[in-house]
Image (cartoon, rainbow, N blue to C red; front, side):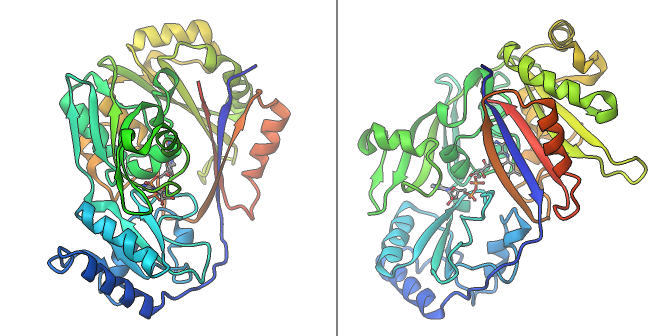
Length: 413
Ligand SMILES: Cc1cc2nc3c(=O)[nH]c(=O)nc-3n(C[C@H](O)[C@H](O)[C@H](O)COP(=O)(O)OP(=O)(O)OC[C@H]3O[C@@H](n4cnc5c(N)ncnc54)[C@H](O)[C@@H]3O)c2cc1C
């Protein structure tokens, strides 16, 4: 049996919305409660944002990554809180309970259903706790560990690790603006996954605030809860404020490639073969696949399969490995680029070659996040998808009412 493939289908859609205006009274009650609970609240000017605040909309939109939820019709929070201290978070938990408000936690805002900043229930008032100020990262090179706060984005984490050592890395996703909080609590797959597992597999400890406002670490939350917060989904068990992670050793340089094959260049055969070959290649090599349609006005529309890879080794070894084990792709030395792991994260975040590694610190721009409306779904496939089924699925990408889409395929081991 083949290892499961992770299939992610992204469809660009036009969907209707319902409107719910945040009740003014609720905002006031919650804000008053926060003032009474926490003495530091009064001294902070940039802490509480109600719909009446001039910067409310700007802050709300700052990390909305799906235009489907960036409309006047999408349900909005009664209050957004951007805490700077633990006690302010505890006060927010207390006041949400006190006034019957749902509490939504936002780290990087990449939730596929916008659950960190909007609500599927139009008449349920809610508060957004935005962890944008909880972004500290400390790397311990000798111990090969790091503490990272949930509001940091993956790019910030990678940058700090790469700065600290060219031979240390962390196995997590490729989109640099994804937030640590939602990513680690949902799993987190990326180019080091085959060798080192998911981000969640490499969490050693965590700081969790539960629904009573208690602050727990691994020992005090217990192993069951510690298991649950590493993959059980964000916002399900409490607010994870920070994570202690195990760093992994990588060589420098590593090698990356991005190779594109269209249907006319045998994409169907190669993708089908990839399903059975890629999992038998050494764990140091991860090849992901993105299938989409070409959108160039000068070419006939066709299917385009993009093979993105990271190899923990030199390009010469990679080329001979591919020639002997997966010649179907036709990889050449000229397709490969050697670089540090940190630079490889810039490459796989979709930035142009020669971009500075500092682009990973930019929370506002990501080549992988568009300003369009989309719907994402993922699934696990236990057996290779037959060629006829691949063609049928790919055919969906041409349907005009869908508007476009992308299918991402990754091996889970
Ligand atoms: C463009 C794009 C690229 C992606 N690439 C990858 C990839 O390469 N690999 C991969 O595995 N995934 C990928 N994802 C999926 C991504 O990992 C998840 O959507 C993840 O949950 C986003 O985390 P976030 O903090 O950015 O999102 P948020 O919207 O802030 O949070 C997501 C969920 O977690 C909750 N949450 C957030 N912070 C906390 C916290 N501190 N404590 C408790 N709950 C919290 C939120 O309430 C929400 O329910 C991608 C998503 C997008 C949009």
